[in-house]
Image 1: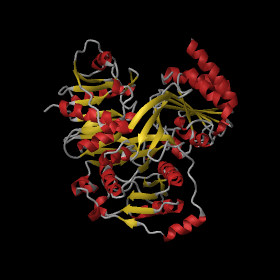
Image 2: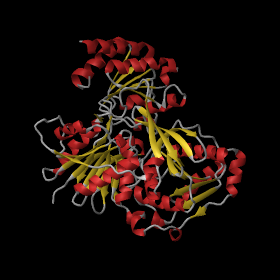
Image 3: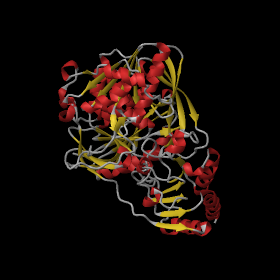
Image 4: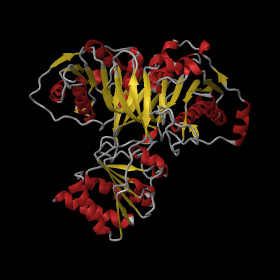
Length: 328
Length: 262
């Protein structure tokens, strides 16, 4: 029997999240050549985007294109996912571990009464069902989980955990339309507006480079150094809990156990001593650079490269040198 | 208004974590247990909502006997009632099983507003609130950072999504999950702590819950923990002191040429 995978491809305003392509690549690998990959595309005026999903690994796109899906709620989307799941006979349903995917997956699991694994960083097929690895307790331990019982298995996948495949325009596939029926419950929670956050243009969780600032910055006005370095390196801005609690920067930027867990290629910690709950949220980064005036700060214990020095001297130099490097 | 808050007792974010001898659980020795930090925001919002509209605030928790400490904290903060589910056959299940137990416990309370934290910082599932909402047939808004009440049944919730804020109009009954930033949780007062000592913690047993035993507890778990492992070790790398510019130039060169991350 084949192993079919259904992927919920998240998009906002017609632009796919990177996680959609990452999930498609993982789905392709998990079929092991014996199974179909179906992608759910839900939105308003998104029909033309189906081709992107096919070139990234989908065999079939289940398209729900409706004005009601301009800003859909999780109740409607979990209902759509359930319909797509029952028609695709998928063994595995992959959703992104984003605000949206985290809303849909538990609802879908409860509707289908099937195994549900949240925040997976690795997924593999086991003799019976699937096995997945995830971080727990804010990255202080990793768990290997196994499903018990029948498919479909519902899994949310951490953005960045699996590489996306390059688009292959020679791939072919089909599109199936799914009609959108309304339900009175949809009207009890209506998304009426979307406010773009000021400043942060790069998604912290999906960023390949993160530059974070901590108490060593001495005041909120000095966060511009972090923003400038992030800008020069092409990265997102992070922060320690200490400075979020002081109100220097919004909580959306907090890295750590009570913030966002990140695993970028490069993490630059500036003026962050390295409290255990912060280290838990960034220690799986590819390469860690620490800049701190205290040579004994715990952050240096896990840093690949450490610079002991005054932030106000080192950061302007780094901003200048990074800009020069980018220009060259 | 009937307000319900789901709380979980979890290891403190400052705690060091060691894996127990069974290889599948966390060694409880020396680990300080606290109310899940995001549940504190849920609790604070419940208190504020009761101050605004009146009503009854009930806290509900699932866990071993020690969980009662977390409920005691909520009673000290001002909860009217505390319910605990601690029967062994109902523990050790998966996230969906836990949501089923909590949902059935809450159903009997005829809730108007159910508040949870956005995530339990131990298992990191992010799904208890949404799953409870689904089981009870209710709408939900998760990761809420701001609430504006129109009247006792209607409100607007701001919810944080990646790089933006969604504004959601909501009608009660509903489930909300709280994010940091929603409010500033208060501390329990001394008289509150004294009063809480005398308040009962009511146990809800499986006989009082209409849950299918094959769906809950360790026996009903559809997801099993096979093993736990420590995070990958990291070696301390190179460190530069002294000449800032020389250090920066060298680090950037290594990042580009050796690590290929720039």
